[in-house]
Image (tube, rainbow, N blue to C red):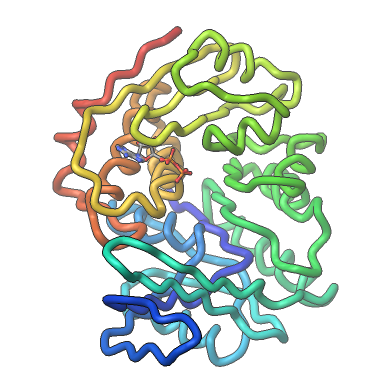
Length: 313
Ligand code: ADP
C-alpha cells in the first residue's frame, strides 16, 4: 500500500529568526533553516513519520530543485519528481518580534506545455506503483486550470483514488469535471469561498446544509477542518462531527496538510469512516504540538486517537 503525495509548486522554505525586524535597514541572521517545503511535502513527511510507504512527486528544476531533492533524501523520504526547465522557488519566512511572521513568497516557475506533458507522463507511470494519490496546493503558472481535474481522471483510469486539497479555480474545475476527486478537504474559509456563503463553525445543521450543496455531488468525502473545533464531514449521504480535546498548540502551520495525510493513511489501511476521521484529527493535532511543520510524533498517536469523538449527525 503506497501513497503518492503530489506537490506541483514545491519550494525551498527558508526561515530567518530575528529578535527585531528593521525595515529599510540591514538585518543579519545567524541561524538559518532551509527545508523542502510545499503542502504535498508536508503530507509526505507526516506519512513518513507514520512509517507509511509513500512516494513524493511533482516538478523540480535547477539547482534549488536538486537541493530540495537532496533534502528529501537526507530525511529518508522517497522522491520521484519530473524535471522542468525553470528554477524551483524559495519562500522566506522571517520570524521576528516575539511571534510575528513576515513572509516573502516567490510565485515560482512558469511551466511550458512540454513540462506539463512530461509531468503527466511521469505521473501515469507512478500511478502503477501506488494505491492512492494526494494532491496539495496551488498550481504553478503555465498549467491549465483543469490540470488537477486531468490528474483525477488519470488516477481513476488507473484505478487509484485521488484526494485533492486545493482552492480557488483549480478546485472548482475539479469539482465540475466528470471524474470527481474522491475527497476534498476545505477549511471553513475555503468552504465559504466555494459556496459563496458565510460558514459558522458552531452551526452544525447549517454546515450539513452547506455540504449538501450540489457542487459536492459525486464527491465521496468532503472534510471541513475547523482548527481547534475539529472537523465536520460528509461521507456519501452521511454527516459526521469530529470533536477534539483541548491541546497545547506549538505551531499550527501545516495542520491541514497533516489532516490530509491522516485521511489518506487511514483510507489506505481500509479503516472505517469513524476511524478515518479520528486518524485525521489525530495527525492534525499532533502536528500542532510540534515546532517543525509537517511533523508528527507517532508514539503519541494512539493516546490522542482515543481522545477524538466522532458523532454521526
Ligand atoms: P488548515 O491548516 O487547512 O486551515 P485547520 O486549521 O482546520 O486546517 O487544522 C486542521 C486540523 O488540525 C484540525 O481539524 C485539528 O485536528 C488540528 N488543529 C488545528 N488547529 C488546532 C488547534 N488550535 N487546536 C487543536 N487542534 C488543531
